[in-house]
Length: 250
Image (cartoon, rainbow, N blue to C red; front, side):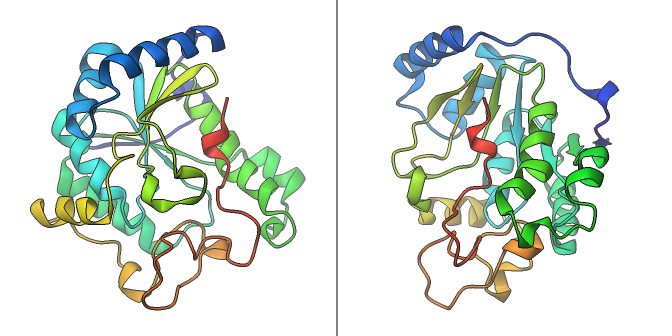
């Protein structure tokens, strides 16, 4: 049975995290033991041995999201999956999420939304994206994720080096302040992702066929020209911005 929960304060996992120093030492130790692994070979020990019950994953349910979701579902279909509903997403993304949840048998989806009180003060008309994208991303993604991660010591992400930019030298295991961040697909290339889709008969995000290579919020996501190789070219196009900020969380 699928448990798709809109997270409230009372739903948030409680418990302390490591200190920054402890997280740094733990990440270094994990890199020594697991840094040569990727994919399921890395996910399994992280979920079952190193962080059992204290690990989650985040998913945008975007164009490549099904790849990591599929691997995680094969390790533990009940692993908590945090989905940030920014209130600015495409309707297709919500429908695609439901399709993937059903396809992969995911049973524990945590939907996290922006704090309505903060939005009322800082983005009362919902147009903050037009004047301050950094603050908009903070209110709608970073702050909600900070709350959603409370009580977890580690989280899985779907970032990959071939996306370029700040992800060029992405390690498979890193620190994020007081937490450990695991990037099981860091070393995968575009062909590897396509193989996961093909071998598992995974559906594609419906907007991919319309020219969207990377999909986030509607106001800040554009189609790209055919043949574009920069996967994230359509995100915040024309701005000096490539990341929403959730991967800077400490």
